[in-house]
Image (cartoon, rainbow, N blue to C red):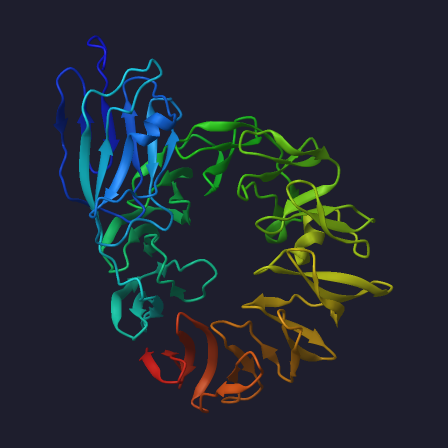
Amino acid sequence: MVNKKIRMYICMVGIAATIFIGKAAYAVGITDGQVVSANKAWKITFSHSIALDDLTKQGIVVQDSKGDNVSISIAIGSDDKSILINPPEGGYKSGENYTLILNNKVHNNKGEKLKDTKSMHFSIQKSVEASTALHRIYSSNYKAGLIDSSGKLVVQPKYNYIKLSNNNDYSINADDNNPIIVSLGSKYGLIDKAGNIILEPKYDYIYGFSDGLSRAKINNKIVFIDVNGKVVIEPQFKEAGDFNNGLAAVKGDNDKYGFIDKTGKVVIQPQFDAYTEGGGGEGFQFQYNFNGDYAAVVKDGKFGVIDKLGNYKIKLDSNFKMFVSDSLILVGQGENGYKYIDVDGNTVFSNSDMPVSSAMEAQDLFFENGFASYFKKKSGASYSMGIVDEKGKVISDAKYDYFAPRISEGMAILRANNEYVCLDTATGNEFSVDAEYVGEFKEGLARVYVKGEGNSYYIDKTGKKVLQPDSSFDSIGDFENGLAMVTYKGKDAYIDKTGKIVWQE
């Protein structure tokens, strides 16, 4: 029972929703059936320090309309009096109804429990059907809008800019539940997939959502906003990076880097150095991001790997270290070459032929879709190239030209003897293509560019020509979410995999 002299209250930061619990329980501003975004995170603030143990976690539940518990995650706030309830991975279901329940298992550090069970109902915004992707279009006056995969107009072309899904050139994935970043004039805001405004354009820039939050710039200050456009972390740092795995890098007053959690609490004090190579737009700045539970850091000119408590998983030393995949770290050893290690320090692959001591030298050694290049010295400063996977298995011997490969969908696009080579990384089978350019495989097809209008075409993973638009097509692009952007008789258009035009400027 709650001590009569202590008044515990809970503040749910959402859409003006507040619950107070004390000697006499009552609620203010609660509206059942609030409509929120699929990535809504609820912040609950108590009057006293809360004990976030297993018992309290059992007392905070979100149930769907069938009464089944949803797999949420819970984190403690920076003041020890607030709790952040994060949505399930992938977000809540579009159009579904939910209930957030707090019962008397929730207690403070003195063991005092909430007096009564409280609940709040909410529902999720309906979005474009999950099976529908969106594709960016431009009007004749170069304003951006969106169509669906059938060519139907979804968002009128009135924006200066529309941000797309990561790694896409012109489409938004069907399973991307984040709001869409748009700009009008010089200001940035948010819309949903139906074109409804979530946040009126007011920011100088919105960077992109990661872990449910995005950096937004206004008056040369960085804030963090949630998927509803609400500021959840006020400006307090000189610089800040994106959230990855619950933490974001920040630059402190001492010009060192540390990490904060999603409540803005500093969990790893600023102590790590900036690390920059090159100059101008070509320079490289060491990015402090957590890959799962670990991050590579630089301190006093030495490189190491820390965990989420700031403890060293791999101690500092002079060898260059950087994550080059979700699980592997590249260790540069100067003239002794380099190796890939896992977070336990086990060597997965090593190569003594190529000297690596910095990020600029490591840029060709990053993994892409599970594979990376490796290089063997031929003569003098000349190298040949092969392919290795994340387990250190050599997929192909170093017999190709030194070339930045494009690797996707299990296919590597390489160069040898002045021809493009398409390598199946699963079988080792390969075929050559005599062309000016071969793009990466997307949705099972790769575009092949041959000089002259109307000569470009698409091949499948066996090298078979499967689609060749006629001579009216000036250029063709990669397929994304079922459509490819092309230029037809001088105008932008989209085609499907049969070559049919589904939309034209």
